[in-house]
Amino acid sequence: MTREELKAAAVAMLDRAYCPYSHFAVGAALECGDGTVFTGCNIENAAYSPTICAERTAVAKAVSEGHTDFVRIVVAGRCQDFCVPCAVCRQVLREFAPNIEVICLNGKGEEQVFTLPELLPHSFGPEFLA
Ligand code: THU
Image (cartoon, rainbow, N blue to C red; front, side, top):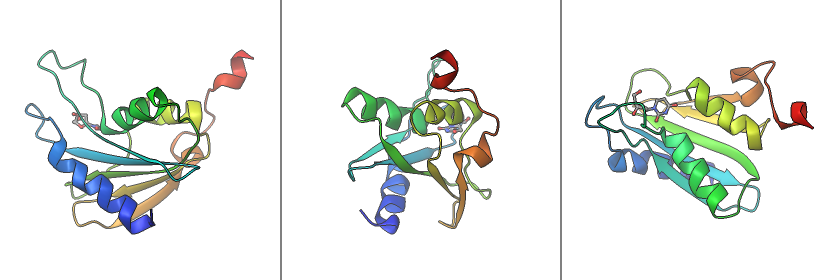
């Protein structure tokens, strides 16, 4: 999948977002080393705290299908700012892909690109427990 196709896959997930409380839709498209792509959207809950972000939906789909080799993720929002991953999602990505490229889109489809170490410096990971 090209970079533009990956971005389009994340944007398409905005329509799948279940966000009746925040009305803040997020879409994600996570690409693996072998080219497999897993998409996700945020899924809110009336009890609020069970809400899962779009990025973690995509990671859960990937890991549960046997994929943990992530190379890039697109995070899309309809907001003015670039839709960056929350701290919990950064940590979840860190578990599997400490150097993943994170492509953040705003509502106009413009991008801002980060590496995970830029978003989560001095991070804690599995090697600490080895
Ligand atoms: N959200 C995400 O899906 N990803 C993030 O990284 C930031 C926040 C969702 C969670 C919630 O449904 C809504 O955005 C507002 O916080």
